[in-house]
Amino acid sequence: MQENKLENEVYEVIEEKVQDETFTIGSIDEINYKEKEYIFVSYTIKGDPTE
Image (tube, rainbow, N blue to C red; front, side):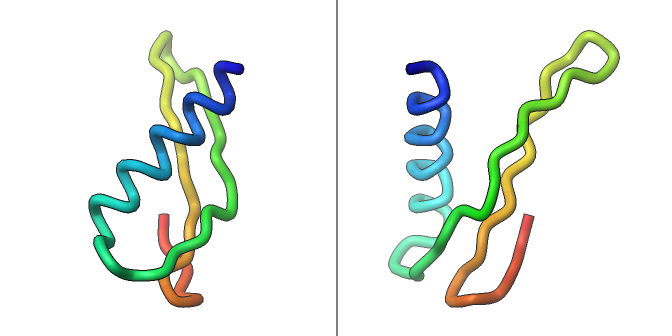
């Protein structure tokens, strides 16, 4: 359930950022480093990779 919530939030943020562009999420990785949690997302906009 929590994973779906994170994925939905990621979609919302990217949708807002790219507006009308077509995008696809490649991966969502949660990493804990030095007691902080980081989320790395890779996605493509019209087939161009970005992170």
